[in-house]
Every structure is written in C-alpha cells, then in structure tokens.
Length: 370
Image (cartoon, rainbow, N blue to C red; front, side, top):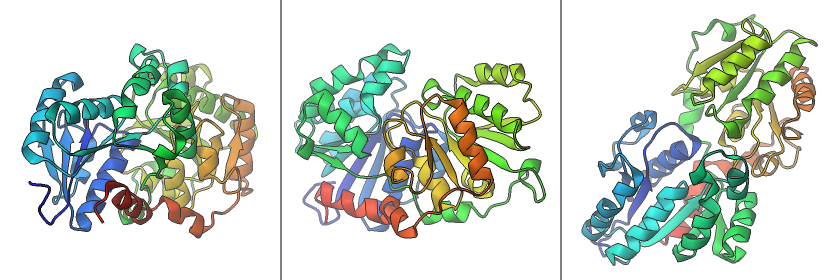
C-alpha cells in the first residue's frame, strides 16, 4: 500500500505470538487500531503462539517464515520496500533492533518506533542469558537511530535514558492498553477447576512465565508462611523453563495439596476475577500488565516494589500492597492482610489511564496518523 493513500497503514513487528504480556498487548493495540479503520499488518518473524486466535480478522498477518530472528531481517527489508507503511512499530528488545536495521537497509521513509518493555539494566544484571546481558549495549548502539522511542513505564524510561543517553524528552511513556472489553467479557466465563467453586478455600493467584524474573520461589515460600496462619490455596498460571525447579520446591515444602501450577491459560481473566488475592513476586518488571488486569477485575493486589512499574500502577501503595523484592516474610504478611480484607479499593478513574482507549489515542498521536 502506498503511504499517500487515505487509509493510514501501520505495521507491527514481533518475533512470534508466543505467550507473554508484550505479545498480548501488541495484539490488543492492533485490534484497537483496526476498529478505528486503520490498516494494520501484524508482521511476524514466525507465525506461532497462542495469541494468534485473538487477532482480529481485520488485522493482516504477515508471515516472514524466519524461524530465527536474524533471518527475518532481509525479509522485513523486502516487506518494507513493497508495502511502505507509514509506521513500523516494534516491541521487545531484539525485534526493535531488527526493525531499525530493516528501515535503513530498505531505504524507505517508514517511521520506525521502538517500544522498550523491560528495565534493561535489571535484566542484564540478573538474567543468566548472554543475550540479555548484552541488551544495554545493543540499545545504546542502535536505539538512537529509531525515529521515536516508547517506554511502557516511567521507570523503564528513566532506565533507558540512562543506558542509551537518549534525552528523556525523546522517550514517550505510554502505558500498556491492558483494560479492554474483551478482558471484562472473558472474566465472566466459568472455571471447571474445583478450587474455584463456591464454598472453597480462598485462592491466591499469580500469572506469568516460569522464569527467573518472576521469582516464583519467593511467592511459594511466602505461601508456606501463609498456611501457618490460615488455610488457603495457591494457583500459578504460566509455563517456562523453571517449572521443574518450582515443582521440586513445592515438594520440599510439603505443599503438593495446597499449590497448583496449571500451565499457560488462554483465559487467565476468569481465574483473576474469582481469586481472593492476586500476587506478583517479580524481581524486576517493565510494567506489570497482570496487576492492571487484576485491579480492573476487582481483585486485591499484593506486589513486590520492583523496578519498574508496580509502584506506578499501584500509585505507590495507595491501590495495593507493596513489599520488598525477595522478602517472603513480608509478602506472606501482605497476603494474609489482603485475605483478611485489609486491602485498598481502586478508584475507577485511576484505571482509565490503562485502558485501550487511552493508549490508542496516545499511539495515534505518536504515529502521526490522526
């Protein structure tokens, strides 16, 4: 499509739609933009992932058929030369750099916007993966060449500016378009799991990839402390490489009858709506979509005060309980407090900043497609 045509053309580039908060948010954004009659291409290095079923029929999925991300570069160059969208928005670190390279190799006038979704300094510090340790250096080298830079929280923006030396005024903070009508609808769907049936013990719920960043061992140890005070159950939704380690910890603590790890769920919202408390134990975050989702569904929230996102989302503890990172005793105390009903309610006006409508308006302004 030529950029001079009337309908604005936006492309969103991701590796895949394998389950994660960033992928879900980008699908929400693509769907929302098409509802406003924009032409949206969802360009994937490789078409895979559970969120494919959530993509609107109005969104054009473009499969670059590149199983390895670097192999998508020449194919993305070809796509840009052929389609020439007004904007190419990319999320997650290395896809962002591929997008920057593709724009300059293609020679097109497409505006490249990169969306950083994690606190890179923390990821590099704690992640065992070499690629994660190199992200600050890569961002410093390549992000300044992006036409525009988005951060999903003020904390991420501060960290990114310090790492890349990009002036803070060049980094636009746009909170994720988390709250949608789809979430509210899916929250009403039934659950067959017996722990969520009427008359059962209260359930503490957590959702996220089973990886070091989410620090589920601290949550599990905290829950063992909770059981010494009152009966309850813990449910964790998500999949990942830490599963066997977490299973072992559950066995070591004798929690097999009290903890259930149910894997990835396409609809976590119905679990959130029916849980007594939502807990986030992360060592670091970029934002914390699940906190917003739980708050929107009326579930009390307990979270680590990790960099970055939770404190912003919870208004520094006004709308949820914040505890230090890695402190299972403090988390247990907060969970017990929340289970007893001593958790603040959330002002609906506060949640408005996290809606798809608010985010969409900011992205439309950013993408110059008003």
